Image 1 (tube, rainbow over the protein chains, first blue to last red):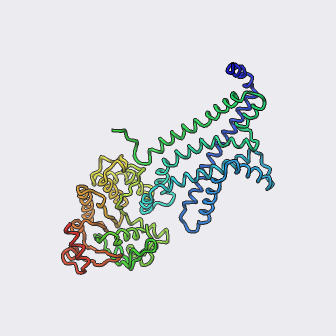
Image 2: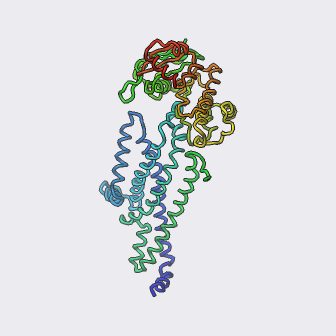
Image 3: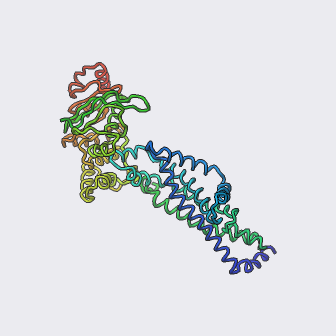
Length: 236
Length: 245
């Protein structure tokens, strides 16, 4: 009875208009996630490098990156989002909710990625870096040729694990009125479509976005992860 | 002129003085060994010389030029002349054996890749590892890794080679392999500063032996003198114990 009711509603839900709404929302979620991940990686790396810098004169950078990472990671996602949303209005910026959401999600992912990258880079044995230094490697030569290749396998799994969580967290942007997947679900549900059907479709779309990312992470892990020590060996 | 001239060198780890006024002068082609109890500062001396631990006072000069450890250019020039083989090998875990040996000559010293590769293969062949070019360090035994580390140091064409207890992590059978390799270098007239607990090896290869304790060189002399007729009571006690083992 219920099932036939749902089946009957499918053609009514998936009208051209609603499909466009869902796709647009999915694209927004994808864009929020992609921008958040890319910005998070780039600035996360920069922050963790600032944090691990050793020159005495760079202490303000170290202090700033420590404060940033520790504060942002401790504040709930939604609060950060709201702080940016209302903060920008108070300060007189007239950003659209979407732009604010882009900024806020990037700020958040940067903090989380920075911490994962820092832990990975710090796990590389100091003696490896000493060997490089003794052979006249510069800081960057040592970073690219020794430190990063050995840190990748430690960084990648948690980073991609975080990204998959992060995609779902972008749903909170709906609270600021951004039309992303969760918001689209609310709209369609409010219009009277069955919640199971609407959120079922939303669920699938989240999966379609996050599954390839998880696969890509697993692929990178295999490619770069093997570089840490030896090639994976077959069990004897 | 001495090739390596160490004057009144003082170094500290966390405010504890580990080198307390070291004076040592080494001529080109000379082989000097540092012996002494653990914690006497032998390895620290090598670390300070190679700039891994900045000295508090004193000086190290290379062929007349005093190394300024606070200045990158000066340290770079000095490090270009040194190579150090670490007690724990410190091979790069993310590189194959061949790449470990080639990486610094190619990307740091900017030498021709093909020539470096030929040299690296020849060196690895010389230390008996021609079948391991493509192996990763963790696929090798300790003795093999140590020999790769020696080949890596040699491929840098250093003027002075610093060897830090290159046999301490090895079983007795492997010790022989590595010591033979070092003896080969000694025959090549390279300047060597060796930290070792292998007394018979030290006696065999060294021109001079320094006995260290408490961050100082307590006695410096020929192997025959240090092992045969030590002047200081502490040297005598250490040497007699070490030789008995």
